Image (cartoon, rainbow, N blue to C red; front, side):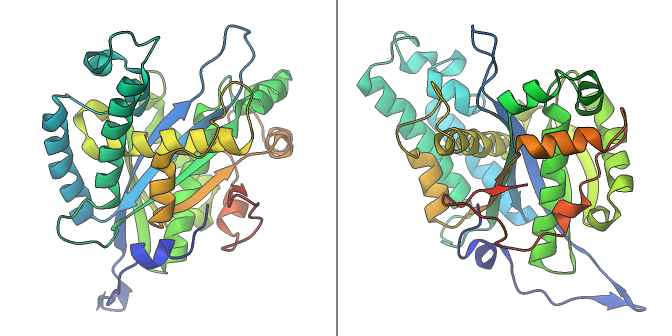
Amino acid sequence: MVLPGSFKQLVEAVHLSKAKGRMFLMVRNAYLDESSDPKPPSGVYRGFFAVGGIIGNSVASYELERNWEKKLEKYDLEYFKASECENGWRQFQKFVKDSKNITPDERSVLDSISLDFISLIINPVALDPKSYLACWGVGVKQDDFYEVIKDDHSCAVLGRDPYRLAYDFAFIEGAWIMKEMGEEWSVHYICDEHEKYSPLAPEAYRSLKEKNPNAAHRMLSFSSIDEKNCAPVQAADAVIYEIRRALNFQHKVPGLSDKAIRPQFKMLADTHMMAYVAHTSREQLEWIAANHQPGQPFHLDEIFEKQMGEDIDELGVRKV
């Protein structure tokens, strides 16, 4: 989703430093997490598998983390996770009597907690109204994905789940945001740890950079951390949860679509923090499967070369 002012609030005036003709890169930290609609009892996946989060400078990240801890203390929480807050699970069970039958008053309490954390993402620096963070995300439509991988070759290329593809899309889109900010900007990625994929992630990230040289010089290092130990990754979880819900609303996914855009997403959008939201189409998944060999890194540089404002639909969401 590209909204007016997104980059005006993210980009600061930069005086480039040069030494012996070499330009020093300006670095942003990007924190990512994933959010997905679970497989229903019918066995047919619906909704989106979404990856994304927040991008900001080190000062904003530090202030977010410092003040995030205060919010956790306020509600006596060890960490914040959007899905658990929404459903009254785990740490949030203390705010409800029965998580399967949440009352209107209990729902109001859970929503107020969620909105309180979202407000901190919007304004992590006390006494400064300027937004120093931007949000972005990419969603893979799960029913399309699982239909496409019924073909053996497509499954061998795309994988048995959309995890890697969605993360690769998000990495390339993060690099694209850096390009839009200016020639000197690059990004360092910090992602939530994953039991299955984290051990493979560094090599997969290196291969992605090699396959996409235009985006690669915007993509610096990659690391992962348990989200329970990293406030900015928890913030990324809160953001991508709202992006996934917004994509479900946009596509009117049966049984998963809200009746209206959630206040949490609207807060992020109205403050011009939502820099970019995208989703795949079935045709794109089929093209990737047809033009890659199993185990080959995805060639996504074409995404990196797009221009601001291209192919935006009526809700402001772009197909990647």
